[in-house]
Image (cartoon, rainbow, N blue to C red):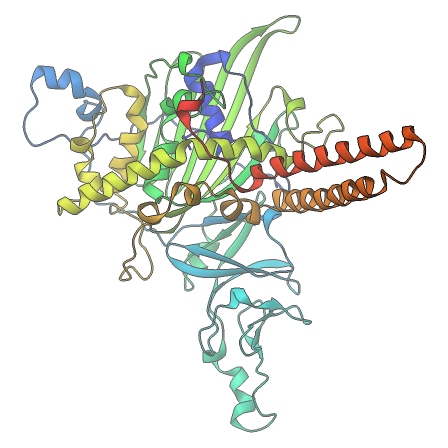
Length: 538
């Protein structure tokens, strides 16, 4: 999922596609209507000066400087490491609100900690609890919303209100010490600060951080997302590779024309991308290129990556146009080797080809997600293999992978500038990796044990977590059953009429309904699994 995933991951990728492929790439911007967006401002992309990865200890020769200038170039000067980034003192987007079901509790992992998200009807707000009942530690996400609108544990029926206070202990006596147990602090669920902003649910992963959370604004989408001239799209998908692998991918527009050939890019459009980092710090980094299209990128730690693509073009009849594309991705560290990608994108051209509120925007959101998932799939196996190799290399040495990065890879072009900038930030300020809860529990990374089929599983990673795709998949299944039933009925009655023309008509109807049923069966694969083989795409 390149830094510019297309409307979802896609949208970001789309941007990249446009970037890398120059202004000719106006293809397929996966953009679907973004709902529940509230006005919000975002800091303009500032000139950026990002530090490059550190040079090796040995002094490079002049030839080495020429080959590796973009690793040890002058713009990556020395920087004090006095300011470290605090992973737990930040707002993290955990889901698109439109994809959450207010009638059901939803499990989620953030920084290795299991959470349950649910809607408190009494206070009309989304709530995040530690996903364990204080009684016997059963997961609250397996529970339900009870008749009082409280979260009820499925194991023994203990219930909790939106503040985390226990409201019901069915096993407690009505008098005496047991009756007072419901008031004990030990009976309370652990609640985390939450906030809804621009259609996203944010969680602050520190139950004692309410004061800091209240004083901190969440990352905001650009104002253009509220501009009626822009069509918008969003998507989320859970990916079985690590936070650093995904962040490196979204920082890299140059892969688009190859990894997403004929989806958001074309191999024959690949060209040099002279990016430069212009600002940096514990907050992240930013940079841009010059020319047409102009691409500005900004990484806001810990997981927000913005891309702004500006294209000057000239069209018949309408004349000169200023096209603008935003691809904003949130790359949320769920657990080691597992990351949620949330991508929101916007563009001010060809709005009729994407979903939206206008009567002429007829493309459904789930159809856009089919294309967006192609973008995710195009990266999936390459990133799985890359992560496996990095893991094996890191086990060969005591040094962190970010410190070894410049030695393990060869990145002589400016197209990799933002990738190096991210690796530098992660080592210098991010302490090499997210600060996981329960870090003592060691498990193999999913990318090292999952098959290709499991890595490309759209159903578990996206469909079940997307309100649009989940509903469409159910509808497809229902219509397929209806058509199969109609086929059987037509076949069974085709021999009854004495007139030959009626027999022929019933036989034709049986064939038509069977054909539609088969078509729906094939289309349903877009919600479940579609194999991706790069060599088969000419």
